[in-house]
Image (cartoon, rainbow, N blue to C red):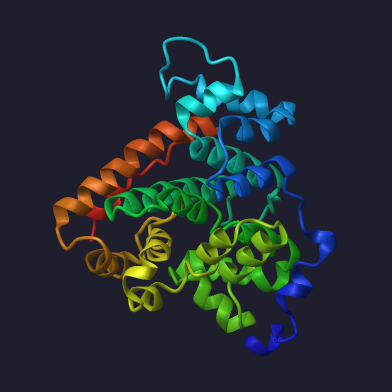
Length: 299
């Protein structure tokens, strides 16, 4: 199997001509988010320079999710009330969502991938907050982007990649393992390369690159707890799956990283379900039909 694709390097797949361009406004916001010497007006400038994004941000802030009693009319005011990280993550979502292609293929469904990405991002942030990690919002972004290369790989390598997606769907095998066997790299490395080409902050590149390395991260102790939260999120079930194929791996890692108590696990999964149900409509996504709490109750 691996010899078929031995000559397929990531650099060959993601050459300049096939890479979608991420809007400059989103990149600017991400770079600002890594600095401590900036305020609401600094974050407002790249948003106000992009009329489409500006309208989306104001609609987002004025949605029922936040429930402000009066309409928010300006971007600096929105950032002050909601926080720069929430606005940046929203802008990042919109940017990536708008440029990633939608390959029409069998068991693959782009909307389901985005549902999974949102749920995993929310889980990673809650896990980070549970551990009292300062970078909890970075974990949200890292988990949000962890699978963004999958549609591009389907589009650019259909003959080689479609069988992997089919096998993952039919046999419940982990996609990254199938990718390593076929190519010698996986979608985590592919997404990290894409993030690097977009000049995203190095912290995000690292979080994305390591999300398939759960066991290695757990073995590194406290310094890797943030990346481990993102990796743990990747073990959550997909919206498309009838079974939680990696449930035992998730439960084992959860107990080692967060808490051995089933009550803590159920509380976190319920919170993720609630936040997903609130956020999904804001991002024009359907709420997942099956909750994580429901998945956790099945053997």
